[in-house]
Image 1 (cartoon, rainbow, N blue to C red):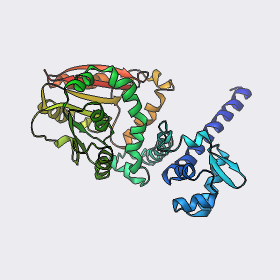
Image 2 (cartoon, helix red, strand yellow; image 1 turned 180 degrees about the vertical axis):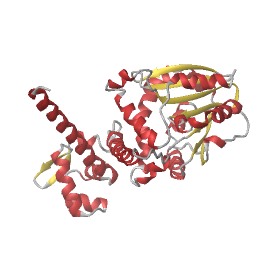
Image 3 (tube, helix red, strand yellow; image 1 turned 45 degrees about the horizontal axis):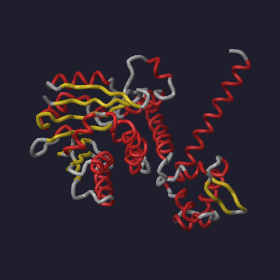
Image 4 (cartoon, rainbow, N blue to C red; image 1 turned 45 degrees about the vertical axis):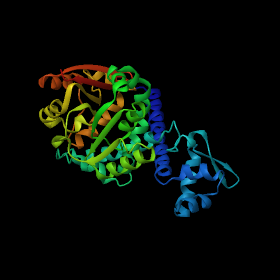
Length: 341
């Protein structure tokens, strides 16, 4: 390798390392409510930020210096104020970058676990998500901030099933509902909808109930803990959704797809939203699909793997359902709609 290329590579790698440092700083500010507190206070000192958030002043002073160094805060004397970059890290900002910071730290955690487990091949399962006590409470909010905009802008307008449901309403079940954002989005769009969310984490269910109640939707939406593989519902269902949940239970796909088919009313649909694992490795080099490769490594730690959309279509066909693939977000996201005929 030529010396000039070596130096350029070293420079680029150091810049990437600083990007990771920057997101670590943002993560601390998000988890401990520091960005929101600064927005509320206007131009506080570090000690005033600490008092507002109940944090240790010495920690807050050092965090404030780091946040200033990476451009999240500006200084006026010894008082801080949010820059536009810092403002975007507020979880309540409509265009928040919160999921970028949360996802970065989660990725680091998964990388550490993968490095530890690679010599033995152990795959400890989804409990690894709970190993970082600060991440799991933010997991649903991270997914909502990452994907609710895509749902509203591209997916919902782009699929006939949602237009049908908007007209007639009906019963919806969301398997692996997380914090319930998908059901809440549908309920706001479809006044005639009644929905049930199921998730394996009690923390997610409690959060989903609080958010539905806050938005005035608790009379139409209910949430309960449960296992997708043993799901049962009284009466037929018009729509069953699984958003980024199928790859978690793919090892028992025969059971899962029998459950989907048996619970749907005639003409009903199962809507599966998954990251679209590509057919060829070359496409993983594209900036949009590169994160899929890192996610798939983390999924392996959890005992999962990402799916090609065609695999999901075949699983629908195996239970007598007709399925169609739609791709979004430059081909990185796939929604497969399976109809019960």
